[in-house]
Length: 135
Image (cartoon, rainbow, N blue to C red):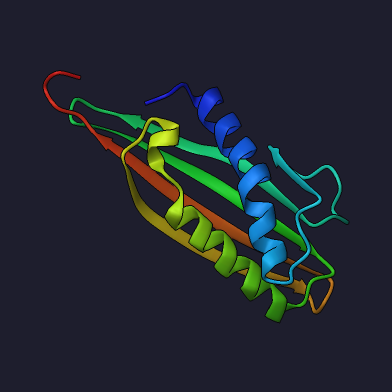
């Protein structure tokens, strides 16, 4: 398992490079910002990356990450397209880039705060790395 700072930074940089073209290919507006940590401007289309938890044991390492898509002035219907693109990206993402081996789980919740004002989508993603006796 890589260092937590390196994992979050790698994910942020990879998403800035790889996710944006996938959004525009679907006719969606690219994120104005993809950043580590919370929102600094609620009137932008943004993606925020957080570490959620790290668990280490003798048999495996587990990493949970949290992503928040802030979709300002995006309709709920269009937010479903964002959700699909991001989910597909996370499923296709190579866990090895983070020093992990398995994508275990993705949980998704969305909230339409005020109709056609902002939609927030939350992704909780869990990766694991089984350890053998040599690790």
